[in-house]
Length: 573
Image (cartoon, rainbow, N blue to C red):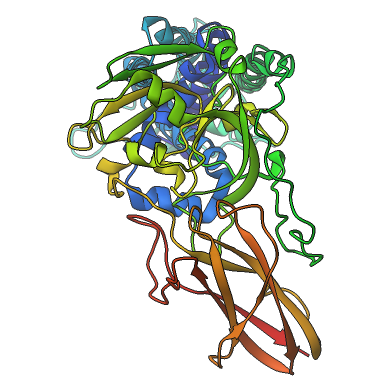
């Protein structure tokens, strides 16, 4: 098989796969965006991927890890599709089996996602059927190359006028004499070698030699093939993007915008003057919604209709209860500033943010259902099936643990859990911050492991005391003289007592802490440094209100959060 043959075949396979994925997107508008093959398979990959690979994705791509996963999945799909095309020109059934396998993988991924039903198989089934049709069109149908480059050329049939050269006579004592030896050599043709002269007729010039004819491909057939692939690839792209756009139009943004949050009966304390230090590059005390970090396993943001949403609290309780959003809005609401942090946040990382949350105290909801004495875990379950396990005691010990419905003065953003999510001060998000929550199940840690526990993470995740240098940064150009070193520190539900900075392993110098709302938020700090020329290493450490100073020992994020001192190397001119 020639290189050109493989290229054409691979293009046919990629076009068929693009049609499969593209047409599935508008179909998924009817069945839900999570049923689209690319999203369903990507979700299965997220669940099955080894933990080191997930950490690598978060470290490299940060909050863009989902986009990177979808792009990577599409690239792998393209490689497999190219192989399907190459196999198909050997035998069409091989290619059709490959397309069927793609459809089957999509179906399996879609129907096995939490909350899925048989209708979720429809996008993959429709896409697989269209993909098979497209593959046939290019391999054996009206758009196939004529002939395929690897096919042997078909000689012209003899005619009465040109019956063809006679067979050379056999010598009784030696090999046959070639016909060309019987006469003078034919003169060369300006466009190619002449065909052998038939007895009684003139010589026939050969067809012109060119890139298509050299491979045995009819130029018109080639144009038809390439035009067909271009049109179908473009159509698949339009269908895919259009389907995704339509899915967004069917989202819940309009319903969210229509919600009017009531005033809290217990408003959050005002942010004190001076909580936001006037230092460039320093994270603001309150993180705006658009800049708040997002780490979760949802490749497509769940669109939960607030009118039909329900929260069910059940399990080891005496009184099972179900609440609607209207029920929550009618209750007395409280408002609190709480800083949330992701357990995947490396030392010095930015997977942390502080916001003003509005909601119902979870303690009140649990009191209404009366948990059993041995129910030491509350399992939060998201609409997409993700779970987290929170110690029951942490929701009833007096801290401001909320079932939040508002964020920074507006309904929860869709990507941050609309219509309701959990917010628990002092615990990493993987054990407490369930977004798009639909169930709270009272159970025991010995009876159930939440999503991340079987994947190597600790059952309980109290936030560790941490600090970070925001200014200066490595790329900054510093000059000798006064330099403000500043950053943030956090130890939610305990508070920060002291922050210290040192230069080049010198003595620790105490920084000045800015005022803060409560122990449940981070705090800004600053320290004045008289910089001298050369390269310097800045380090920071914090001590919480219990007197515990963060450890110098370096540990990765697994199994319960990173440790170590944040270090920044700077050059001073």
